[in-house]
Image 1 (cartoon, protein in one colour):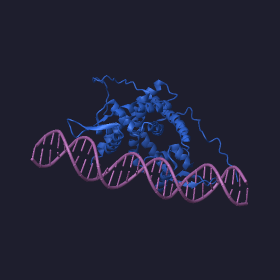
Image 2: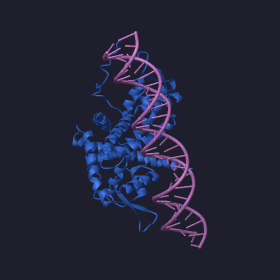
Image 3: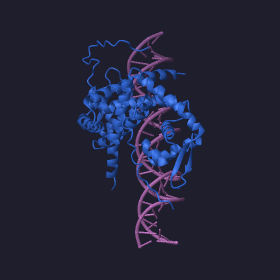
Image 4: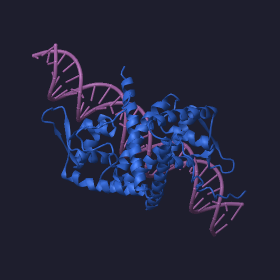
Length: 169
Length: 169
DNA sequence: CGGCAGCCTTAAAAAATTTAATTAAAAGAT
DNA sequence: ATCTTTTAATTAAATTTTTTAAGGCTGCCG
């Protein structure tokens, strides 16, 4: 039988100065986000947090007492998903629910001591992940990158809202 | 529609020139990717494609005859997931499997006519999405953005592989 | 007061992904 | 040359996650 050589196909690193175009954006973004989430999830495990929970803690750290719906909207998930996430996190002791005094329909969410303590761990986990991801970036590049990512989200969400209105039958 | 002027004279102490830091990266990336995928999925529906399938078509368009495992690795999913995706896409007529002549263990995957025809639709859908996302970006910004995203993925995947080796009990 | 609308939760259903186990084939060793 | 080990893909089972639909409570307004 013919012998099989399997060398030389491991890395195709010949695209050092590739001219990326707009068409490369969505796959690159998807891939980067997936890798990011993989590493971040692993880092978060040590804090007892699961994927998706970090955003809740950070949102509350920034503005405690957000409503469940507000969190859902901010984090881009549906209401039941947020309910489940909040429920689990409440069971884990990271936060607690409290009905709003003025409007009893609203469920406001507050960080507990544990939750507030976990903020640093999350930031550390995220920081570690972010640092690894941007090892060879300049600070200016990072600022620009974040700025563009936020702009992308804003541009797309404007359209998403528009399309949502279309769904009304 | 859209905002032409953004005076931003609210009594917020944040001006337009928000100083983003490394810590803003992972949430921004996650959010942007989610919004991107939401819009892209909606665009792809018209081609009969579901989420995750576009990457397969585009990979094959770039290099037809990839193995199932190669696709899985490239797209960052586990083998069974790729098997299922390929199976569904084969049933949909977008591609076909063919055992490798030299190594019968390998399943090579080739685009069909339909699959090859869908490339343009995917690129169009992605392009539409990408354009919307980067409405107000310069071309230079886009190139830089993609370059950085690719670098992020590369940096993180290096670590992901490393950690995978750690898992060996 | 009674109906309507908003917000959250629960329940049920659907989908997707991961782990583990199976089949098949190639490479290597005895 | 045969047997063992390793690699690739698939199948099966189970876990997890997300979406849709329905229910319940509250505030608002006629």
